[in-house]
Image 1: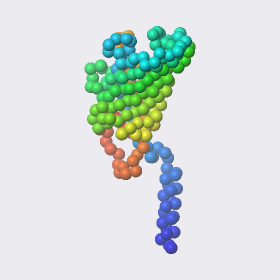
Image 2 (image 1 turned 90 degrees about the vertical axis):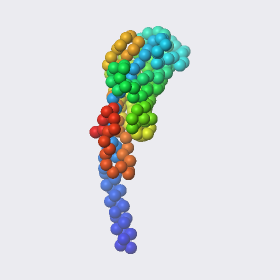
Image 3 (image 1 turned 180 degrees about the vertical axis):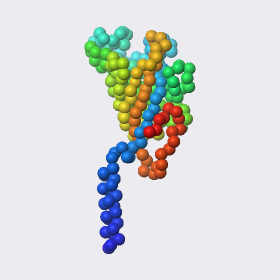
Image 4 (image 1 turned 45 degrees about the vertical axis):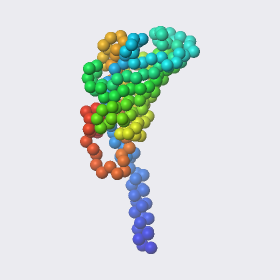
Length: 198
């Protein structure tokens, strides 16, 4: 009898401790900074293409030909470890964006960063939000897979280099956290210069 009361008290104490711990104690912050090589326009090296032509009307704040309300484009952009277009490839960005305003420069975007090197090979970070004419864009991190399963946070994007009117480099600076596994005994050292564990 005494041992069952003691066991119940220990379980109750453990539950109280677990409920009073801040949520951040159960998550590990992560930061990823990569560079997206975007090739725009209609050339053979273009990495962003029209998937669906929208019904319109034409949006006066955007340049043709992709300026109809509802125009949807698909992207498959190379991701590198630095802004230099000859730097080592570390992944791809796949996604879509759609002209979502009839008179403002607004696109709704959904994209996934796939890392393809090192320990995080095959891990993804899923992001989404709105692109407008701001110099700095912020999107939500809404999930991930493998090393980034359950990721939450935000990403800051900005153009950091323009090689030409049709080749620009976008920096993606991801601030996220992932759940700490129950079995994790200690923090692991970062295995890649792209991942900045805090």
